[in-house]
Length: 114
Image (cartoon, rainbow, N blue to C red; front, side):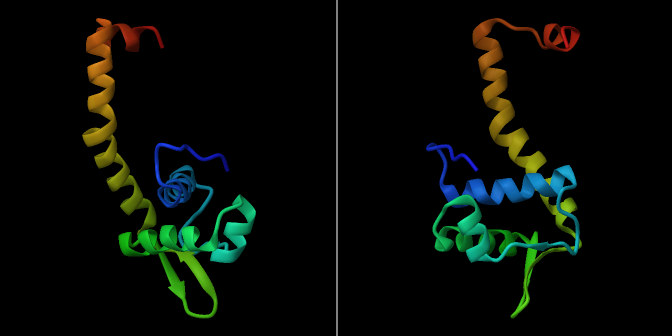
């Protein structure tokens, strides 16, 4: 996994797992790697992975079965889809619109040139 220096690594890990859920690579009930396994796999400190897992647990995307591991929750797809749409509309889309305005682009042009 390659990391972007503009965003905390634990958030990038969280986003990567959320993206796997949206793409269907991870489904409800799937077990995800342990904190140590995932840390070793992507080359980061297990504490950083733990922060990502804690965030995902708080969001209701994953849950921990004590002594067994972390799993994707039944509602993960709906939770991730809703929060990702909200983040896009509130954070990313305004930046795109501003850039389009600066460049003098009309949205119709973009959709016509697909």
